[in-house]
Length: 240
Image (cartoon, rainbow, N blue to C red; front, side):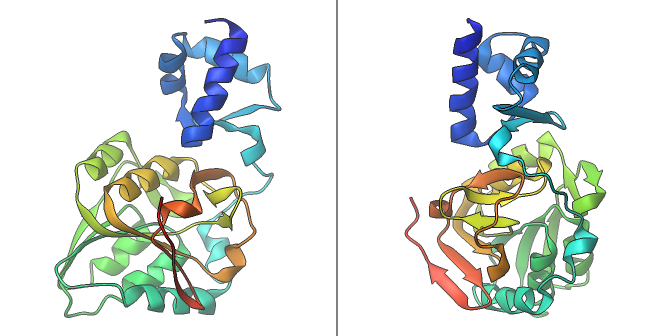
């Protein structure tokens, strides 16, 4: 495949799935990983390679994230949003709780008497769930990422793909009608997408400060959610 054809193919793939592993891009293009690296390095205005992942350069702002910095930001709004989300919980269901400071509050609000299977990949969420006597927790493992207190591995993604999830409660760092729903960390994308693909219902739980923001990498469009839940309540959407 000629270089220009490779660039077009890579751009098309990123438009569909937002982020790609280097090895997956090499397989798609039928070239070595080194060739893909050279193509990306030669076009910094078009592509960015970070932590083993390829994304569109337009999707990467010059900012970082740590969970400690986010914990006190809009804490009351996050708690109220999670309170609205908690009303959707139903006994004996299997749910997915995403990482992030907003959804730790949702984990705390699970009623003590409620029986749930909860899938998570965040250490701070797991620490709350382990104290819930009627919660069966499935903690997805892998390499620990301190900035978001979460884990990442290919095995976790495969586990999610085999599961049946009733409701997925998702967090985000940015929500924009045109640019989609974004987060800071590249390792979260595959896990978020696998959880959403396995879920019957998908609910985005964010405080209103996230609207109009765009963070490092897009993992979905707003049209992929059944509802958006903020401190103002639940807004139902017609999912594509």
